[in-house]
Length: 337
View 1 (cartoon, rainbow, N blue to C red):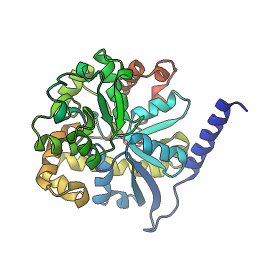
View 2 (cartoon, one colour):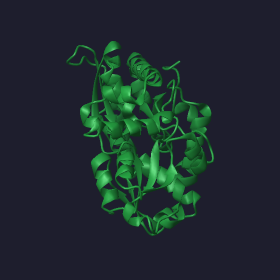
View 3 (cartoon, helix red, strand yellow):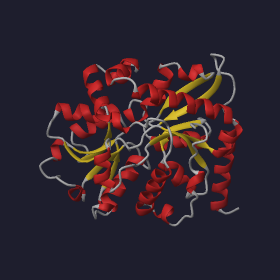
View 4 (cartoon, rainbow, N blue to C red):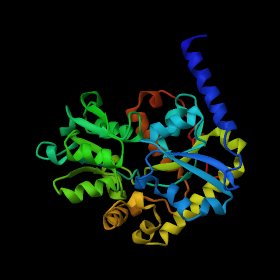
């Protein structure tokens, strides 16, 4: 057996294990589901935790276990390895995996924008004033191979900077990302709230090179007003084996998104775990206020949004550019409509 065939066989066995996992009874009596989150404290994935805080998973007869990871690529590894049933991560991973012949399907969309900020460390603010200035510098991403790195690669390419001329450093999320930026261990970083708002509050010298939390910033960066961010996704086999559980998860998130639309940032913050809010509740509320427009109002994945993600990936990733991908198989709205 060739190395390539052996590798594909290992992946197939792992995904089969994922398909067979989940669906059992949890300690609370509901159907047990393990969700890997690509950085739970980031506002990017807030609906995943908020649904639990509001009791919506329990309402749907689900016993959901949330496991936190340092980035979306690590959460994806958990899914492929069989230790998670579902991922709360970025939609682009389903397209990247489709380019490798692996079927992953997003079934509820949480963000209509990426929700990230490309920020300059205060220690580099005198010399890094544009994305072109990132050439030869150190850039921080949550984890190697994560969506933060993919988006950074696209931004660099669009501004005629060869990504190979930028050193990439995995800085994680929250406290580790804040420390890396404030101490100058990286010159720029792809950051999410509330971490970015905290850094900007402490030092107004922090410069924003790209703000992907709002429609105008997304349009400036990508030339389009939409770019679906975080979703819940799983393997196609798992979804086909557990359609009722998938529908229950989608309903819980959709209810959460609707609840968010009807409540203030302060109301939402009050529902989140104290560990997520940290010592400065006002700052957390401010960060939420800065990011509220990025949340989807209904959980539906727009077909044109999926096309935009594919287009951008194809421009910055050779494996996507060279693959024939049926985008309709990378997401479904069946469970939110």
